[in-house]
Length: 196
Image (cartoon, rainbow, N blue to C red; front, side, top):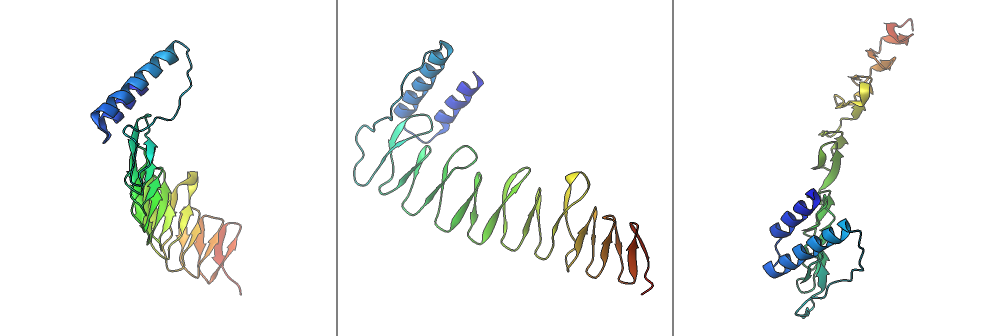
């Protein structure tokens, strides 16, 4: 029942004519009744009335409603993309992006950016940055994985990951826990003065 209400709300919020919205609502309601009764029926692609002309395409929306695309455009969920634009799958709802942009889940990024998938969703970051769990690391830093899989950015300037820390350039990670200076050696997981 919750899905039925959600679908109805999406239809009413979509930019389609009222008559098509009512038809789509009727289809969903009948489908819910038939499903509750265990009845299955064959569905066919809807036909646009009046027929699409002038380089338009008859599109089938998310909820089964039929509509004509823009001239020379392509179908994209409940809308159509203009020529040269791309249809992104989105986070469940398709949308159009302009030339030069890239799809990144439910958002779009500029061509100079990259898509970073995080635990909280997607975000656009600079091409020189590194995607690191819920955020991004600046250029020159590394994404490190500490205890319990928690990620963090190294200090940069050639720093390397070392357990829950990062060792600056020239230092050595010892026992995945501490950093030894160039004058020290790692022995049994501890930094000791080097005899060399």
